[in-house]
Length: 272
Image 1 (cartoon, rainbow, N blue to C red):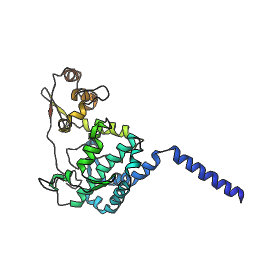
Image 2: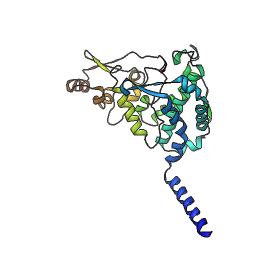
Image 3: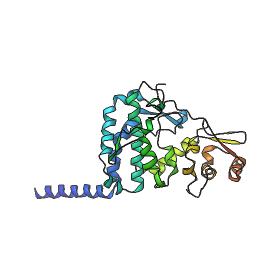
Image 4: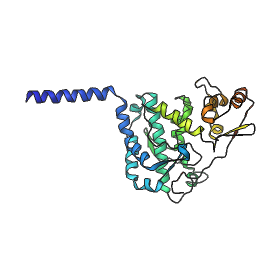
């Protein structure tokens, strides 16, 4: 009997040590329900460069999505403040994407665009409906204050991770973001988006890129990996952009113009 109790005690101790030694374990567990929903309802299109969402099917799993959002809302500010930056950022990106999905299915199928929600003085991004870190927040607050505010995370690639439920957006990733994989996930999303030649292409002496680079130009011109300009950021991804040596030299010299392609606000709906 003593041997049995000793063996159980040792196993419990080993489990505890394993849990403590892997601080990302709890976060992976926190985001597991969202990961399952994304894997189930997000479908890659355009040779994997973009994705669509099966909103009709996701709406049937609303209780699972609501349960995940409740788990996020239960995280208090003190707990969040104790996390490292990768863990915080993965949490915030997942929260933004999950609350955006929740907003869409609340109004689905009676919308063709996220911009159909609300009105001129009440855009979908300014509606306070998202309980997070002790406040009921808007999508704008999550993105522009918590994620982008003060360049706390010094991470321009977040623009390829947060998803506005539109065709013009970078792909909604088919998995949840986690602390352990965050940098790899963000890099994958950036390469994926910039390799989409329906949005990034050469037209005469102009490199056309997504309006995201226009709207958030300051984020791409903040120092990052040695780049301090939009041209410098794009030069980090010449392979994804499929630029020739001549075009690369022109971009580096500032003689290749940069323009912005049209942005498609239609819903990224699998059924459309």
